[in-house]
Length: 414
Image 1 (spheres, helix red, strand yellow):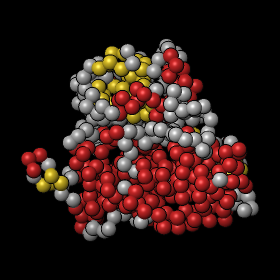
Image 2 (image 1 turned 180 degrees about the vertical axis):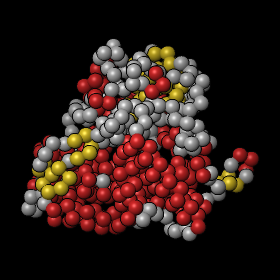
Image 3 (image 1 turned 60 degrees about the horizontal axis):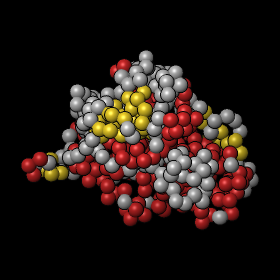
Image 4 (image 1 turned 135 degrees about the vertical axis):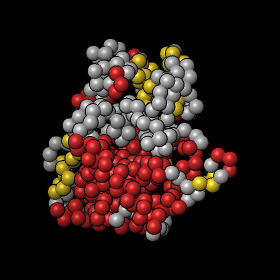
């Protein structure tokens, strides 16, 4: 592979969806590949690209060697190509921290996302799904991404965190601006980005202050008032930086990835009528269809780690302090693991996809996302045979998230 063949810092390569052709070559020719520096690369640095399922699992199973926080010679780090600052993001945000900080914060809320705890949320999820779909049907034509796929996760994470309904769409606009590189390149600032970041942080700080003053029965109130055992056995509340990072992460992750899985899943079904018709005939396949949607869409494109020590992976010598990136959509198309990986199969079994990651940083909201997708898809089943696209799909421009901006559809008579 040469720099001219593959430039994963060129966001235009991702503007029509994930570039599976590039990663098919990488899996075959260079499954652990050194991506040289490019003019767009944050910090002017190269990074390792890990594209196969087996090597990705090895990285995720070894958080001591592959840190989510930082590595030798760095003050910052995190899970993006750009080094993010310590104390503000890395080391305080759940997905960008290592034990013991990660363990301390995750222990606060892990039970709330367990299957038994989420069972009580199911009637609410079904009622919201029915209301959202009823409103979309009444319009006849709609943007499925905006009007349906974004609405259920947005309402759900807002309910969980205690965000007032009237505030949720402002938060949605801010997160969309932060995650989608519409007007900028990697690491570049923009006025809209600065305003969105300030808006999200400011809102989070105000909501946390409100929960401290008048707690409710929501998760954010629990976290704000919790006291955890720290070093030496002392009890302490989460810091302001940890609380702000917790709110930002859960709201963004809870609203963004699931909406892209829902919209991408419908798109996959509409483009493969045989699979759509089979699912309608055999609704018992709904659980396996959900897993296939997750594999197929792989809404998080990559995460970064930083090597904490020299290590060899697939014959390549990774040095302490090197950035490594592992690419979930590529691992989820690995022919060594998935039979006919470019075939969308609602009955696929087994399906050991890594759409939610693996190990220490396995997605906290995986069970919730599965329930949201399953319930909305089940409520949508009677409509599926008559749904058709009415215009082109518009993708987000990002190498970090495989996202959709718009999916215009029409509902036919049921």
